[in-house]
Amino acid sequence: MLDVCLLGCGGMMPLPGRWLTSLMTRFNGSSLLIDCGEGTQIAVKEKGWSFKPIDTICFTHYHGDHISGLPGLLLTMGNAEREEPLTLIGPKGLERVVNALRVIAPELPFPLVFQEIQGPEQTFEQKGYRIKAFRVNHNVTCCGYTIELCRAGRFDVERAKAAEIPVRFWNRLQKGEEIEHEGRIYRPEDVLGPQRKGIKVTYCTDTRPTDSIVKNAAGSDLFICEGMYGDPEKAPKAVEYKHMTFQEAALLAKKTKPKEMWLTHYSPSLVRPEQYMDEVRKIFPRIYPGKDGKSVKLGFEEEE
Image (tube, rainbow, N blue to C red; front, side, top):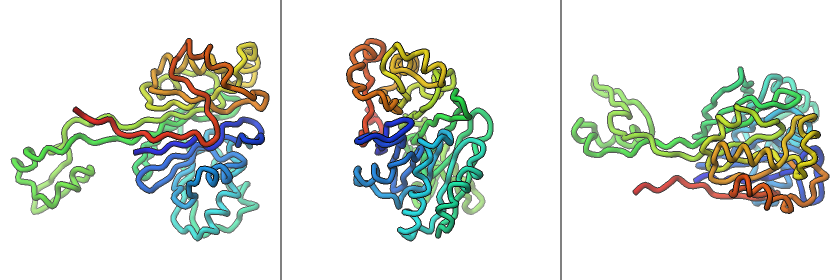
């Protein structure tokens, strides 16, 4: 089970009732954050979730509305006596930018682990998450992310018995561990069936439509995508500042076929995103306006 919460859906500046960009997920006791705009701490508190399990923070890019909430969050986590390492993932310049922000949060009781994204795509394994960063098209280096929970194949008891694998090793093999015992090597593929469908969430903001989004968002259970402007007449402005309209996001969904799409990163001038939904649903029916605190529980598909 993966909990997903869109903590903030505003772009550029926070508004009453609309915090800046941030997404939080929870899985197996570990939490992950993508972006940390101003107001993220309040949004987490309003949701009733905790800061302490956050083990990974990913950044799409380093504009203020995506990272300005980080120093305060780090201080809060430090005041909660956290000692475990915190992993930060982001485009080139990550360590330089974070250390500059830490001028106002200089002493932390836990180490920061910096992982700068190398090249147009890179995959990270963190606390049961498979995180894939991919380059998008903004006016600074910017990345989207897919978060996947992979699911191993079903354990085949009969194959395990036929191979005379001791029962005490079954659980470890099911978790993907290779075991050497008394001169024999037991491998997960010896006892596991084909990999089963996992859970996939894709998140991207501050970008024009790109082939990289189409490629990486394909088949997502949930696709959270920038919709800076709802009015189609603002399409030239979206092109100029390298953002997207609702219509362009819907066309991406039509190509990638997610189970559901949420729009986010609204312009401060966009007060009522709901008024544009009827038109964009003609392009992709399962599209919904994001709002602060909007959340969902995603589970693994049951097999027949």
